[in-house]
Amino acid sequence: MADAQTADTTQQVTSQIPIASPSQKNPKRVAAGKAIAEKRRQAREAQKQKVAEADEIIANERLRKAQEEARKAKEAVDPPVENVVTPVVNPVEAPTLTTTQWLSVASIIVSLAAIYYKREEIKGTIAKVKAPHAKAPAFAKEPVVAAPKKNGIRSMD
Image 1: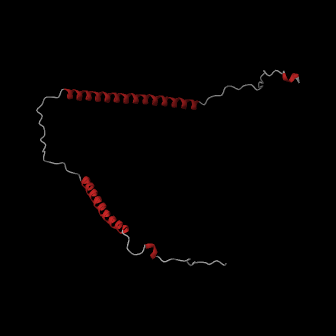
Image 2 (image 1 turned 90 degrees about the horizontal axis):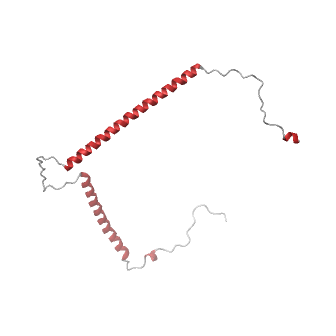
């Protein structure tokens, strides 16, 4: 048993079959792979060119906006001297309401009228409840009911 544990396990098993020549690649597949790689490269270049053009357009737009802001700021600081005629505003003319605003005002008025009407109606009912009649209380008027009759299917007891 001691020999089995000390056996040399570092040797490799090799095949006795001779190795065949390296596998040949399919030339059509190789050509197709090269064509696909070239198309992808051209597409990447075209995309990079489009991104560069877009960046240039964005930079030009930012420059134009900055120049416009600078021009507006300069005009605000140094207003041009001109004969400016101020428009005459008629002080008698009051602001008018739009149709929507008129409808809102009418809606509010109708709501207030409805609340006032309901208030008068509620006052009347509360007054009736608070003033008890001089006769006997309301619960004494009802007849005393003994056990009610059972309707429907009777039990067999």
